[in-house]
Image (cartoon, rainbow, N blue to C red; front, side, top):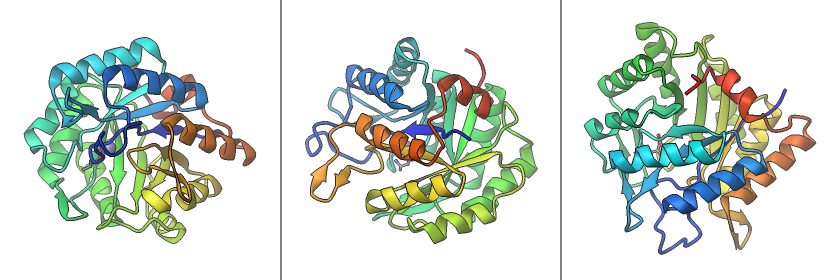
Length: 274
Ligand code: KMH
Ligand code: ZN
């Protein structure tokens, strides 16, 4: 079995002033997408920034980013509908107007450090239905074990997503969410509903490597990137997203689970041809 590697290069939390190598401009994002594809990524989980490098859900910029990455790579383009903790729910729904291949869909509200990442049932449900209508494949983000129950409720209420596949991603190690430990990941995997066809995992910060190793060993897939982790090794910051993808691809290959091609990943996730 091969390994789906998703890169989450930017996120909404880090400041460019603190981490200058964080890709925030469209040119930097396209360059990052290219180098991460070459390193073995098949999907990009995208947050965008404005001219001041601040998180934005500007519709024109979102559309331009999707189009530019599509033009320059074969990566599956997944737009974040989580945005930043400050984005209103209504604005987060408008992300779908940019017609990405995939969108994130977080299955519940989570304490997020000192903030709250809000995902009430009505929002999740609207996002699920709108993604289905627009033939956009959701990736279900699970920050906590309770989110697994809400995922099952979504599928019971609305049926399968577009494409018929159900791919989930455990986002572990957020302060307020499930811990980034092998035990927590495996507990989540054990209670996934039968409709789930694949899972990946990511660990925030120091949970990065243990969770990566757990996912590889347990038959899961990988998400890496500076959205989740900016430390490459003790005392050494990540230089680029591509080096995180390179390391993930190297470890996956050693474990006889080489990176999945973009063509195979499209099939694997049920992505619509656009
Ligand atoms: N930035 C976080 C508040 C997602 O992209 O869907 C939410 C997040 C999840 O990153
Ligand atoms: Zn995100």
